[in-house]
Image (tube, rainbow, N blue to C red; front, side, top):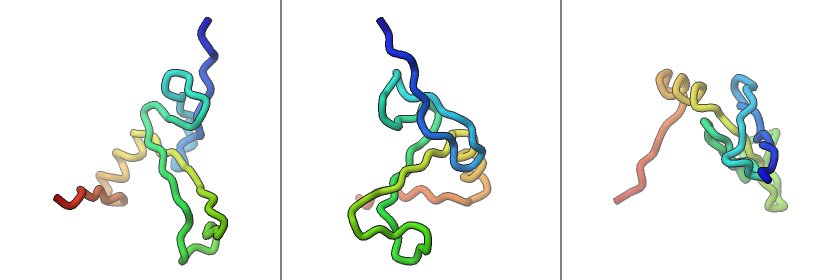
Length: 79
């Protein structure tokens, strides 16, 4: 018996709901990327001191648009 698909969080840019990978129970978006932040000192919205984190998804379509517009940067690891 298969488990019903549980949606992951929607895309933070366009609001599209993303399906979870193979019915995962945690946030694991298909055709999207999960971003995790532990806060940032310069933020007035999210800078926790208790170790909590924030997650957000961006769908592949929005990520492609942002990359084309140079709104995201991909950094390669130092070799």
